[in-house]
Image 1 (cartoon, rainbow, N blue to C red):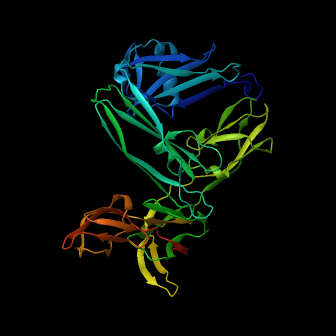
Image 2 (cartoon, rainbow, N blue to C red; image 1 turned 60 degrees about the vertical axis):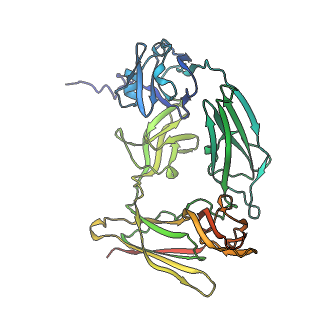
Length: 482
């Protein structure tokens, strides 16, 4: 039996460690090269610190065994990587990695240092590749293209797609830059422009071939950019509206949603409801004592991390005073602070936030017209009795669908030899219309104006997309479970 309490009298000791797990968000891409010649490892590893490396390729983890690539059998978490990953020397010793040619490589780096370390370990990886094939390159820029907008709203890019034709070893790389006010963004891949605001765009196209003799070619057929007319218009195939998550303090059982909207042409509306239990709360939970350096604290009790932490509710205090300079990672339930040594760190937050489970609401009333020309669509949902379990928190989601389709050889009628007008069945995309007559198209009225030799059957093929739906107002109501 101990005769004294070593913890009470400070005769025991603690060892604090600093640790970090870094995962690359952008890969090291070896596409188009002829050999992968290993890594150059830079940075420092002071005495008493550790650096370990593994790599993710094709959604699997790998390491090096000597000069060979082997699958990494650990879970990819900090503790197993710091124990079993490659050292910097082992990584630098590998000079040929043919298995990773034409692959995307994501390095994962684990760093560890004692809590009192004055110099922390650092790491920088450079991938060495070689291309022994001659490449000819031409770079062109498009004109500056202004996107249509409604009023003073900034258009928002829905997506950018391209169609290219390449033969042999030819390739095309298309990038885009955007301008809202006075400054241009940097050029970026066209996929990265999705959901960005832009009043003006410009494309940079890079053509590459390995031979000028005609065996290689690279051509851009089309670049299509879809955008909204501003904040109010919907240009994508699906738009969603969410209500605020609210705690009604009573167990809920039924929800109804009513939507007033303009007539729907090819488009439709759906509604979903989510029921959840209320979150739990921590009030001034003691996390630990600051060391005066950057460090992490667990959001939880007795080393057990709380799950479902609501990041918007996190409040930190140092010796009872609000601490505003901190960062958090709710995925692992940790906060990172750097404040005065000896300060007691406490936190208040909500946790146990459940994942949303969207339930499809049944259509109850469909498009009943009103005197002002608007229509009503109403949805209804009741929780099954065996699933009612103190769900007092709820919100709804409204989905607006703009379906797309293709019409092949729609028969419009027989030509009279004079100008004729036909209304298409759907709202055609003007640039996709193929017709065996001279024609013009008005997208607002869906009317195509044609002229063809007498007695010719006029046929038309085109892609179409549902009209932009307009919601005038919507309401949602809940009633308690019986």
